Image (cartoon, rainbow, N blue to C red; front, side, top):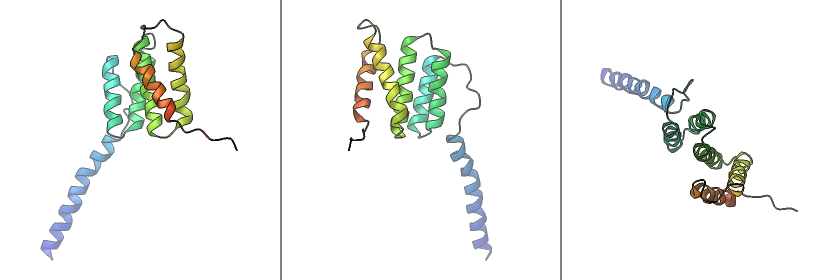
Length: 134
């Protein structure tokens, strides 16, 4: 009986030690500290890769807010926000973002902004399922 009880206590202790790790991985910082634009984007990407979409969006939106005057940062962060929405199948939120990015490219001199995000936005838009008219 003592051996069984020790095993049970050990199991519960292990669970309680590991449980906070799961919650900390999925948490969103209450306040995002000062970071460079690339640090914000990188933190967003790390959270995205870990499946923590809420935190990823927080970092990407912070990049947009703090670096809104930097067009390249704005374009990259907005693309990443749209990409998160695509992963979540929130097509109604992703579509206007990708259309906005394509409008930015359409209304700018070619070569002004990184061409990759234009192409990526086009690819993502093509993936959005549209309801067929009946």
